Image: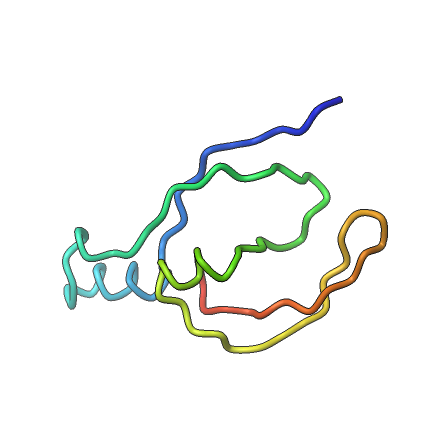
Length: 81
């Protein structure tokens, strides 16, 4: 069985709120479309630093993620996507 990829658009959650409240236009919502690996067992979304910067997301916390094969790594937690 091969990998399953999906094209998804990620948006800055804070920008969505600001647009809804009329503080910015919808055209100013920061977003990026990426090809993402689908993982039906995932409990959270993991993005790389480049995507975080494109979306303008602030790091608010850190946690240890466990990947397939029981590989563990430290990950930053950002504002909502």
